[in-house]
Image (cartoon, rainbow, N blue to C red; front, side, top):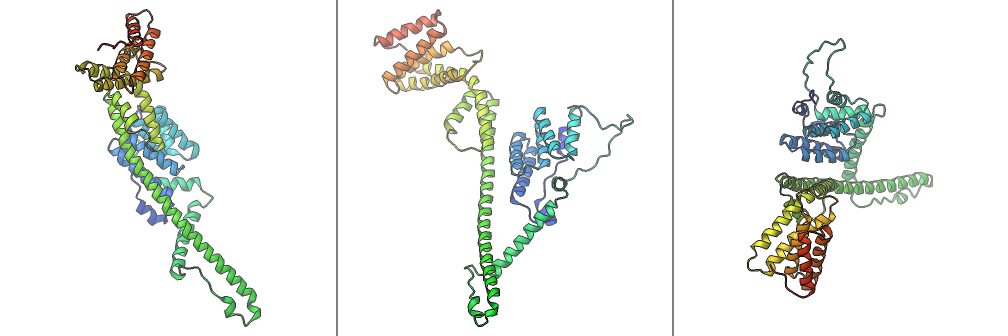
Length: 399
């Protein structure tokens, strides 16, 4: 990436002036408009150095409008800002695959490959700095290039404008109730007009049906717009939660991450992209949290000088989390001593008598047997056998 200045490239991306775009080409489809709004939001997030949140907004923009090449290029730059060159290359190649004229993506890939902008005769020339086209201009240009020969924008935009004008005219001149003109009574005296009457009545019915269809389409469009706005609000809300979780993980508070995910966020509906990020973060933090749950359990157990059931229950809960994660993990970190977790966890569980003494004893026996299975000839295994004898003979386990 020696030839790639990320900050300089980001300065070439400008906010899309939606009002200006609509003044030039008329009304644009809602999905494209929302995609542009998300693109602008991503640029604002990048100004605040929130690359991860910007990527989420760009993913949503591209899902709304899959041919948004400017958003794809910007996502590639975001990945480079996060030192994720593989994903950056993937985005640039995606642009080139979809758009044969993907000059910007081609230039980015060339820079990542270490190529420069030297002239053909081998003499390096300093390129003339030129202001990059705005994001709106690039977006419109790319769509026009992609659909060249099909009159894509001409047909669709003109059709939308004409449709809106006709709908407004119809709403102004046609009453809200179904049209019911008795053309037969007007022209009943002239039998030669019967075919024309039938044709007019048919057109009247078709016009009423079309008006009803237009009303239904308008209702659906409003519902779709509301749904998209709700989704954007949900993304903004959950992006903040994800950022807080990542901050806890960066600070080494892995236990807090797991507790928040499994207790505070469990069962809540999340956007798919955010849910995937949370699942990945949880998987990363779980093994690292085992020792923190163990130490928390030991601290609560030791501080329970008056040997209260509540103190033992709180300690047992910490050990139970550590034991569950151990049993879910394929490989444990080097700083985790599973034998100690099972032994001291078994003692706390037995003394907690929760949810009942019988159930607590049953789980404690399982923990002590795990100690013997893991280290059958160790001193801890000998202690575990003594605790098993205590439980089976009805003797209380000492603090």
